[in-house]
Length: 206
Length: 323
Image 1 (cartoon, each protein chain N blue to C red):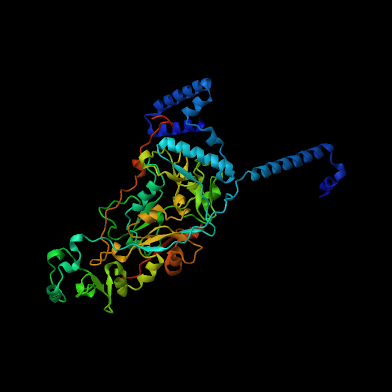
Image 2: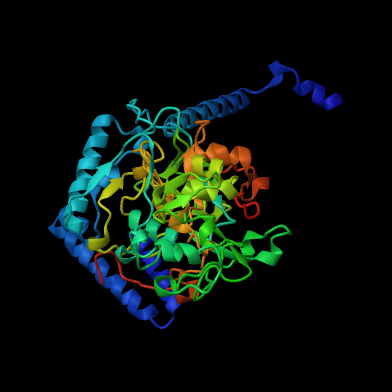
């Protein structure tokens, strides 16, 4: 402690040390200044965009049911009193419906199709709805899906997120007679790293 | 020149046998450039496809409205000439009171990759070398009850028909994080988050250092190692300067939520391409939006939540039994 006490006395510093300190102080100021300049050159966090007019919310458009081959329609071309008699009993399907597979729970034609008016569907309360409104029939059993579909969470929505939006009905995606999805063909896989070809040309060169 | 030379040598070494020839090519190019100096600056510019105006261009966020107009005019002229169609480049800004969010129903995704190619077409990705902004990972369904390790997902699956038995699929693109590590590490301020939540890239300010790719925990950023190849007839002429404008070699690119579409109110291309309706998009600030509905009613999660990047891309399980 004895020797150091002298160093604390300011009068004993030689002038050369004062110069060093002032140089260091100057350097600090210059470096700080440079940093300030550098910080000023950082881009703004975001661009100052001009305000823009709001897009109207638009409306939900329900796409009509997918098209059915003309030769099936209208149903009452074939379905008359005779077929009505056969109707209620489950049996092997024939003629135009030879290929129709019915694998939808324990349902039979008459659970959904009206016997008297085959051009319409029949709800549980015996009221008739056209094929375009088939979703009203589906949601009698699949009621939990209705609010999700209305909210746009179940099913496909196209068009705009703000503006007109197109909703599809159940039967667009689910074949009502065999509802589960069938696997489809996928698109090609991306290339593996080892399959990537190196090309060494400079820009403009081939 | 320095960058070109280094690239050249690096690729030459990778190929081994071509090392000598690539050096000769370099010397040839150097000679051409040397001759060009004598002829004049435009010769160098054309030899290197160097564009002085692009080189001097300010960061997108610092361009005045007047300067931005000039940049857009130059880009429209350049692309219309290059691709032989009427290209429009927009710099349309965010809407007030909008924060975009994306939802993906992994209980429905069938792994068909239709979104991947819809994205390539919409966003002018390079066809060869191939760049995909969306990667679809395949996982074992039996593994789903334990914590899924994303690195174990297989993006290269091939099946005759999808979905394959016992598998499930997780498509991954940019998660548009609220606290995005990619934009924090960018040394040039070339990537940032817009007021509507979209993380964008100023492709003219990207120097290709790929720090952002190292920082991104989702592998969502892709680098143009080679000269992008975009056939003129497949170019989408509806471009946004921060979105699907064609990229140059040596820059990083990624999903922008189809900024050129969503800022006009439209849905992203991948959303419209999904055949099973597994993709959901909307405004997180609108309580009536479908994205808010699924956040409130469904079991949602984000990828790598423990990293606290706060993604605005939500995965959810939509099906609950058959009813």
